[in-house]
Length: 246
Image (cartoon, rainbow, N blue to C red; front, side):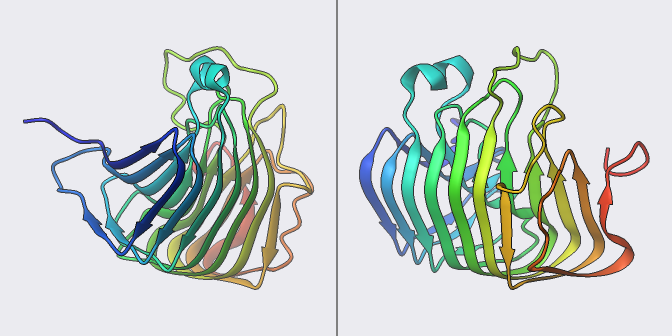
């Protein structure tokens, strides 16, 4: 039996529309993304429901040296009026982002049914690449494990490729009208050598209810105004330590 790890893989494509389909990955297929958009541009995904056993939608642009050699970003992408049910992420950027990702809007979507981390950005020191001009707006999240999963040292398991400089850069990431309920507000972990700064994240009218707060590391001068956190246990925003969120 052959296992399929991406149900739809949009690769090196200029102009593509997915409208009104229902994607459901079988439980015994591991790491099964619903849709992968890889080094492609002018993509529309609308009125689509996805239930997966990895990210519902993953946006990528190549891994490490091969991605830099091709040098083709994923850009000009609109995802709207979609329902993301169970999955490890709703819409994820990375971790293969060496060619860059830019000009992506995700709007008017429902993310529920124990989706692990609906708003997700992943990278590693070897990746490089710039992720910029990304907007999540009018998003409803219910029953998630965490709202944000932003990790620049994702799955740092040996053997590791050497770091590539400049490291992955996130710029102009906007969250607007996000209403969510989760076990945790999530995580926001930047690079020690290149912390998230005042040009990285912007929040507007975001309301999150969670048991635990937002764990951060290597975050400098990010303005959290516009992010309202209603937390039951501990601090709303706290620094990761040896005793928390290893």
